[in-house]
Image 1: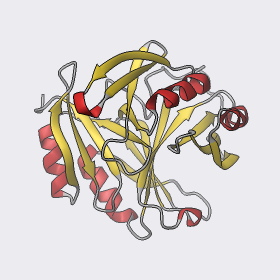
Image 2: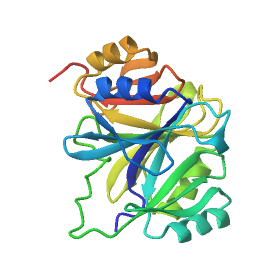
Image 3: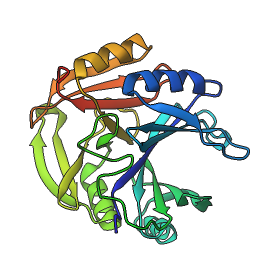
Length: 261
């Protein structure tokens, strides 16, 4: 029913750095963070306003040497079918579909250009939650509000995701020397944009979390050890954005009004 919707955001950070990440993101977004109680694996869950909004974990052993990063997950009707389709479309399956007890079935994949992402087939819920619920809610602060792909070939990438998730091409924004910023839609609503690599060394997905005041979020983030990489900058529609690297090296962005309202 929600195939192709952003549904989860997950931080993988350095070994031993999880307490610092909990403190940093908890203060920045007002998240309440608690251990998920997984057997043999430390995984922390962040919540805000009654919604589970993100997961935080130490870097898995099979990803040793990978810089800390945020991964975006997308809702799928069938995780096994999605993984199989990614292969036929030229992408890669990094982690074959597997069950998460009490949650659903997931897989870790990448598009043909190399940007990694996850898919999650949630367990059935009755009644079905609203479209904007859980981690993804473009109307709420401290939730996922926008997603962005930096790619070596954004046109081919959008063709890939359109085939996989049913996304549609929306407005194209001319960014001058930086090329085109191509918006895309899911279920009739713009949910993100795609562009060239810019300053990114590799293709990647970037999450944007909503904030009530970008200026104050910048103060909290930099005060907590993050580096402001870009912004604040006004974007079409009147919102402002800022782009950060946290103290361990994971990149993320915020979006919202410039000043607290």
